[in-house]
Length: 270
Image (cartoon, rainbow, N blue to C red; front, side, top):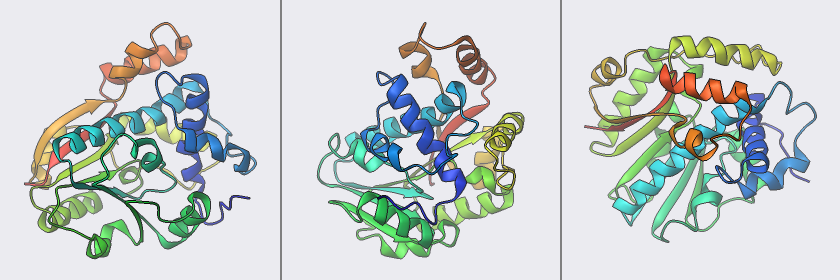
């Protein structure tokens, strides 16, 4: 039996979403590994979720997958580093789509990495798990080949911290890996209000979010880095799922993109 001991409640929200959307809309997003874990979810893990929130969560992974695939096409031999990986299953979704010279790393706190090993079976081919706090950058010493082009991805993490902590981390990452690629998701402060409402619905009143970005250009200047692109969440989802979603989801996706409430920033660390 899979052991989810040590995984925070917030880790189940994206996992439940990947399962739900893989079953409901596989033409948009399909995660075989997530589906394999459904029988082992703890009781109450699906509490509070509904189609729009599941689509919001999955849109993040859909877009990150596209960013990684574009990067690996640009750099046949490279590092792909997931920071605060949780139970992210991107390695299993992407390993057959990228070449065998792409090295995957997943970084998270020791308890989470311990659980990840139990759930996913430890290090796989071209994959290394690293225990550590993403904010102290000690994990960087465990990357095997720092000369390779690298992309660093932070998904669903920064929102739980404060701006000064995020700014400090990004500046340190730039110093350590100048010229490399960095991507993370964010919401506006208005978008955070909806997200915190949803978190409370799941019974997770202690895991509220604090960090939002209202001015993307200003944030990039504060970090002293180059903004490469700013991607709203649902561009592809609205095309692929046109006429297939309920009205609440349809309106939610349209409004989120129109107001640019949720997005992924892709930055060059220079």
